[in-house]
Length: 429
Image 1 (cartoon, rainbow, N blue to C red):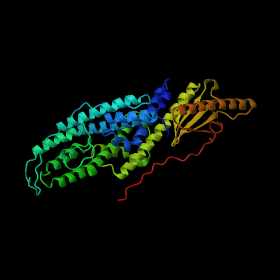
Image 2: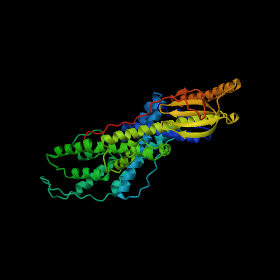
Image 3: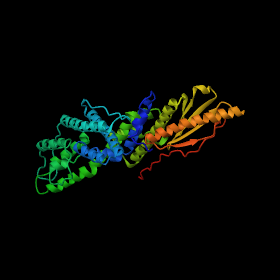
Image 4: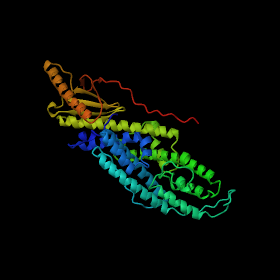
């Protein structure tokens, strides 16, 4: 779906129905950002603050306003996911913390407002994680390996390394060598769980201070960079998808929709990943991506339905009925002066297809009946053209499909559209 966030506030302002439009437009924004989360969820780490300011300034300099807004929306979705992970970490630790609510995206949210919120949340998440680090019970490690520190109490080393781990929430390092324990510890992803952090601290504390230190440091660095951090990034991706589906405008739009049967357990599996109880496997990642594609399709249909509703009610139509089909969402509307003789029927299908026709209660018999039909067809078409104009202003490409006038109760003339498919490839085990 080609939706340009820059244009959405235009169609979301004004009349009473704008409230619904604002929600569905926001749902589209969230779905699109979450579907790009493989990049945005990772980018959110270490690129806020001064770096984010510099990036935004560079984008502004090129006058690419659409890119600016897309970046801002993606960062909001990514930081909502990080708040979800902080909440899970506090829950697991049994620590009561005032964790901010996710920011509910809407079409009216400015890029400047999003940027300010992201910067604030970057600092707040760092503060909350440091509090959780400080609240963790002391970790006591003794080692019995074949090194000179065998059976030694490593409390002092652990205390020193805990400070290094806490500092990583404030300053993310560049790629470091394996020459400093502190620098290697600081490579651990800030969204690590308490268990993952303690694992690194215990390994760091056991590193001997002699000639073989570089070998142990290299091993620890490899463990962090190639094993732990990728798993945390996968968990953050799961949190990005889950927080989008369970809170905010997208959650509101898909609340009453059932995903395809193969994906009905996917959200529950993603919750297990976010809780740290399982990994985001290749199979589950594919399922999650399909679930988000489905959610974007639902949001897109809802947005266009509300856009049709807004434009046609402004054109003088009144809503008679809304209805849902397997591959479409529909509206039946009429103008008051038509009485019960005619109605405009609209179906919004996947692929941004708007199919419409005039529906009559009886077959036209006289020339006058045919003239009235033609006049009301023209009125319907003019109303639908206003939808196309509004969609273009919102940056949405749609395709209009007009079918012949139909008589209610008779077999309808329909168009054939290929149903969306949500396939995923299972792991070969």
